[in-house]
Image (cartoon, rainbow, N blue to C red; front, side, top):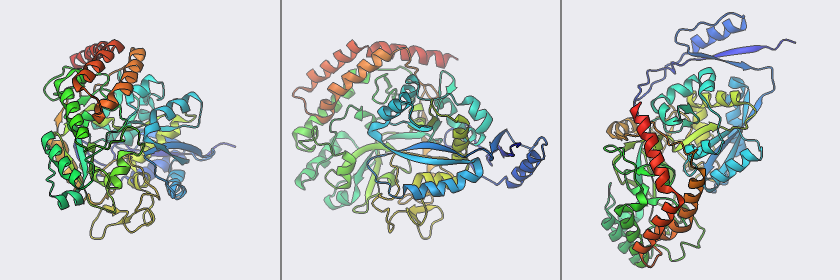
Length: 522
């Protein structure tokens, strides 16, 4: 029997004019009439000609629905409402793209290992998350992702339109491999803190605090039996959260632009005076008792210690809605930024969705990705769960939700700490973010400076041995420096620098500089 094929026209007009620069606001008038007419024409076997339609995606509703496995990134949330969220998601995806969704929670610390091992082992993986601690460049180097340009052209006009302002940042060597969760991509380093505690103890927290001011806060907190923060057994470049760097690699293993809006010279941050001073500060904090004595052996995350009010603050990325990630029913949270907002490739690729290289149906995966960017209801579901179950609307607001008063107030229902789905101008926002968020987002992006390397991504394919060696050195030597638990900071930094040079870091940085120079010369 001849299959019935319904042609769904996905217009590239996305309903509004989208400006090419970061921070441009979009609006979405409906195109329902044009879509219905095009669908009817296609069913009659005629060529659908719709003004403004960029591409036509053909959805075959006679074939069995394809189940798309998609990861969400979090900490240790129980996600007890996961099946109900999937049901609500599938109520949208099944009639629109003839696909269902299997949401797979993944602990952030396992991102790289689980993804690469899953791909190598042939596990069921379709849409995967990259960024965060598993960079786009590493994922491409590992062979985890499929190229997306053809699929975007054929089946992803909405996704392409929403992410157009960051399109260059989604590419490596001119090829698109993943789609940004931050189409409004300005970002900077920040600190989230316990505002209730700050008010009680008279601690003045403000944007771009100095290290001396944070040290003074640590002394006040010590008197009350509270630790300032915890760095723990971390091999991350924690300095990046307190600076305006443009960082290549999760921990600057490929170098950094230390003055990205003014200079295109890539530096080894671990050889900088600023890094050594950062380590000296951490030693002061540890020696003075501002950091937990057992932080190298206690496996409790700093996020959990913050929630339990055992530490006062922790580093985080800063965006106008980041405070919502840190809401807590036990105390009020605050968020400060530590540097000027910056438009970087790293900001655009912080959280991304790509299609697994082993997916059986890349076409269906692109259908879903496109729908996520096009459909605000679907994006809201994937971000926040089911209304009335996992969140409720805040009275007196248009787009603000809260989890307070629901069984998900403790994030046990459905919660994903580190995933961003869809167009932020079509999703709801979480209190204490307000309805002004959409204007705040635009203002933050308008204020931001742009890195000279925006759009450029280092291709590390030629340096797999060096990358592995650099990572091993950082994992071995950086945690003690981050934690301030070295007897001689200068000697420990010199040892780290020598080991990184031996691992080939400066050679990799030279290669990165050569690629950047070539990119900028185009």
